Length: 281
Length: 294
Image 1 (tube, rainbow over the protein chains, first blue to last red):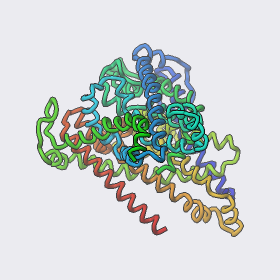
Image 2 (image 1 turned 45 degrees about the horizontal axis):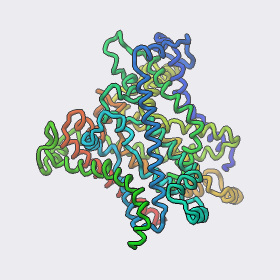
Image 3 (image 1 turned 90 degrees about the vertical axis):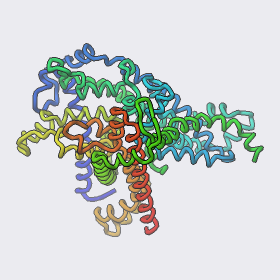
């Protein structure tokens, strides 16, 4: 688009520099994770593990319970995302019914929720979750953001693109709401459904404030909280118990694996979703 | 009308759980927050109406003013840098021709947006540690003589929160801008070159004006998000940096959950909500006026 040579060279420079700022720190995680405890404590530039060692992973699994937090997060992510997608689809479906009396009031209420972010109501949320007896349950993490205005509006945008004529003829054939949703809207707006699901998977997997607030029971700890205590070394009480960087980086690497496995499949939808979401405002 | 309502009863049944959810887990907590902010907090719950006492306490606490100040500085930093800097990679991405390279770079700069704050802080604690990669390079090239302790130096605390937030979001914002740029017809740029416009002029007179509506959207979203900064600063908070990066959201957590002073914490939460609504309203009016003038 731009023509001068310098503009092209500058473009490459900017992007390579940025990409390096993303890739190099993540690569040092890998190289540190596969280093021995001693090597990981040495100052200097280590872009390759020397000597190669699985000591970090060994210590991680021997000393810290990392499997249970993984299982808890998996449970919350799968169940939470499923419920979120279903409810958002219902919300989007109701909002596209043009002749529904009170539709604008419903839409107004949903939009209003955008002005109340979690971080502003941390303390009352704790009180309310306590009233509902949700503290120290994994259910609390499924309930928080069980549905969101953002996802409902995204579903609505995608549902609106489903051809009216197709829906009309299905309705004349006697299709009810559930049949319309299941056989027409959801399959035809599949990219929208997958976008909402992809964002929600990332959101639930990364959940931090909510488990910090609601969960105390060591049996119910989620991945990010377990990771936090490894990284910030809350478990190291004595110098003997010192957690070396190779252990922390092994923990981070393991936590990255599920994301990196899903990323190639989700990337298309994550990028598409953000452009739809960006235009929405 | 009644007939239409009756015909659509099933739709109301479908939307009811969603509205009930928002009621129970957003509006009700919001109301609780306002209610608690006027109550004296007891060990087992609120014990009585105290009027504006909690608010008086909030504004009489120096730590609150410090937290408001921290929140504002961090928000301004994140909003300015986080809105403007991604324009560069967005324009740059347009120039990259082999498609696989473009997609690869796009993926690389977008990846941090998916990472949790725990992982981000963990990764950079490693890279920026006194014996880590960055300090080793800076020492080896003689730029510094003593390693910089990025995470323990009060002077670095706010730049670190701002910098890592920008790092996390830059790919996300760049792709929003890129999507907007793709709707710019190449013919316009071509016509400009025929008229003798150089690259600088093309960026200033065609590309930036075309991006302006999207820049405003990103500006507002970033501003609102940054006023609620919690995770990032919370994870970077330690004894030495607390006074620089304790945001208002972190203050409410420390006061309400750790010290269980529900009244004062709720009042601080209401103040945070009021401040963010006020700032976003001002920003909206300001941006709308600019629109009207344009």
